[in-house]
Length: 111
Length: 115
Image 1 (cartoon, each protein chain N blue to C red):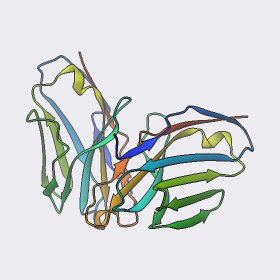
Image 2 (cartoon, each protein chain N blue to C red):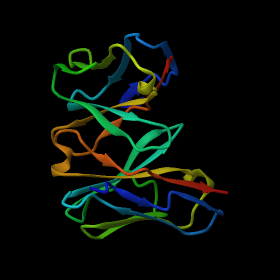
Image 3 (spheres, rainbow over the protein chains, first blue to last red):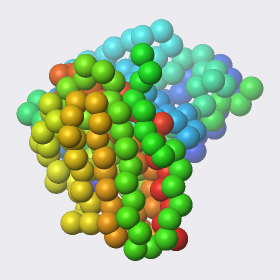
Image 4 (cartoon, rainbow over the protein chains, first blue to last red):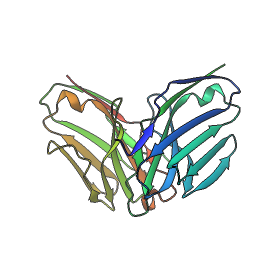
């Protein structure tokens, strides 16, 4: 079993929809949770960062961490065609800088 | 700032050949990471350095892989001899203070095809 599981998609939604992306993990020691966005043939770039549990909002993006369920989510409101990309969750422990990535979910927002 | 610079962007080689991938991190960053991305396995950490010193190389698949960081502005990942299963996109990333805010800055990757 992988440490971090993520549905690969693809997920196809119409413009303006609310998108929900999720990851589950098995290691309860993970404390840092991130979402990266990767456009085709580019490197990943950081979207959201959360330490421990709770919610964080940044514009149209909201990240949620539920450590009791070992489950993290990224919500995108009013999705735009420019949001079409692969979204990777990532996490690490306090004691290590080793960032473990999910396999990524491909999102397509149709105009 | 120029960002993380990787070369070559694309490499096609034959099985058994030596491959060298290069990375220039962002100036001032003290951590450097090498990742490999494939459809089957996603993004896997191969090795990371702190202040030019290798800290964790547990992700290096086997002895055919080696990485060096001779100075703060340059790192190489070498595969010798290469095999078809090494075909992947190799990313270099750098960060300040180990990316405590989660921010690793990735290069655009080196796409390797081994025939």
